[in-house]
Amino acid sequence: MSDQTPPDPVTRGGGRGLFIAFEGGDGAGKSTQAGLLGAWLTEQGYAVSHTREPGGTTLGRQIRELVLHGEDGSVTPRAEALLFAADRAHHVASLVRPALERGHVVLTDRYLDSSVAYQGAARALGHEEIRDLSLWAVEGLVPDLTVLLDVPAALGRARRREVHDRLEREADSFHDRVRAGFLELAARDPERYVVLDASGAPEELAAAVRDRVSLLVARADLARDVTAEGA
Image (cartoon, rainbow, N blue to C red; front, side, top):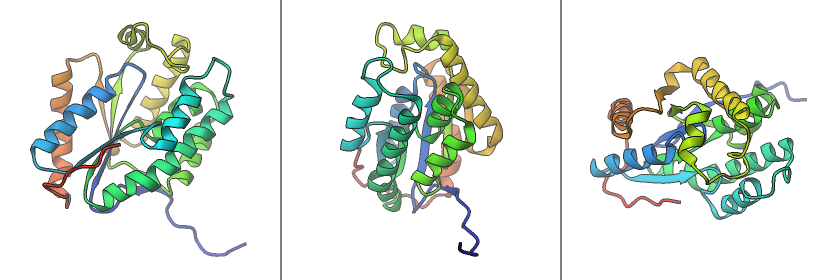
């Protein structure tokens, strides 16, 4: 065994850029808010990279199909957690870190908090176990800011209407546990989160997100007037 002291496993952001994750239950409006923030940042002249998990890379799209669009019961809980971690490892190494190093603002629809909430809390695999797995996969990279759009299970289901993937088809009790998992994460690290009531009007939510992001942008050395490479 080595007697060297391991480094701090958590690293905020990376490179010159800003890393912002949008989290929340299904139907919370993450994609909408990421799109609105990205459009505003682009108008300000910043380079923006949009991505999502799973599915931000070619490998990620294949994993997404396996995990989210298979038959119910086709993926066991531990296999589900490992597949999401594999996607995340590849996603960060091949897309997120390079974009941050170029000075981009990287906006991701879901990141490691989703694994902690869905597999750690709702699947009862353990908060710390799933968080540690994801941190190992991404070599400690966490967002500079996580926007948590808080939505009750019933409202999320109503917004999704008839379109449901394998996780979305879970009972409201499952999604209640997901919601509680997200809120616990935000309570543990309030400086890294902005928690918003997702039942509010989209433009009001977008304004609140812009207010918080403006503070980060003012302190960052971001690339400007560069065409972003989305996923």
